[in-house]
Image (cartoon, rainbow, N blue to C red):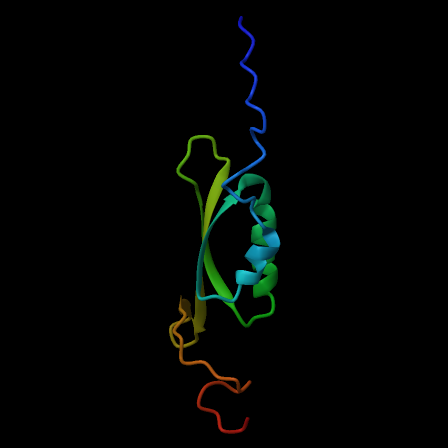
Length: 112
């Protein structure tokens, strides 16, 4: 068996793919929709952070986890879509932006 060829000097020092940043991901929570590719070793923590974020009750997400398009299940695609509860229909429905406001009482409020 032949020995592997040595790597060229400096090989492996630069990488075009940044490592997955859990804190950077957490800062994205609150957006109406997200799609991220997560390494297998971070998947449980990502789901934990999403469910903790939803625990405040302000933002709720429907989410889906799928294997990334590779053979070895090293990464997963996590898709989050913001939803609101429809009491009339008794189901979660896609979130609809009704405008943005600096008022804590919502858009169109004149109290603030």
